[in-house]
Image 1: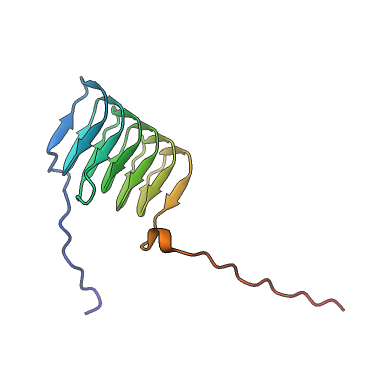
Image 2: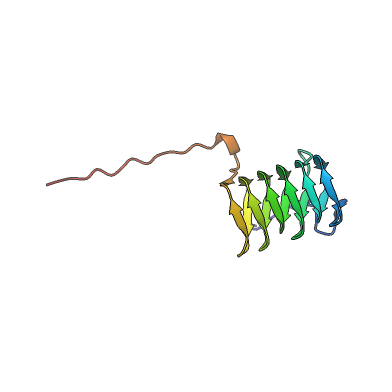
Length: 141
């Protein structure tokens, strides 16, 4: 009754439709749907098609110099640029991110390094408001 979870169609780790292998160095932006595994180097932005349930996997040997976006992301390599993950971000022990990160859910292993600001996306995203609580009055006397 209370634990009814709707099945969510997500890309699994076995379903990579695209691969940038370790012997490839790519200069230019990459746009992807479904799954992308990066073991090589990309100099340019790596962006998922908006509205898709994409998965980006960056292996320990992989490196991206540019801004990155994905629905889900498994990061074990290096990113120099901002990272936006709409759903689940996993930073594995070899992950190195030099840039700001926006995420909805975060899992971070020991050894992962982030040189930037971590910002959690709320369900309402921009509609969220911050309320300041009144300060308690101090009575002297």
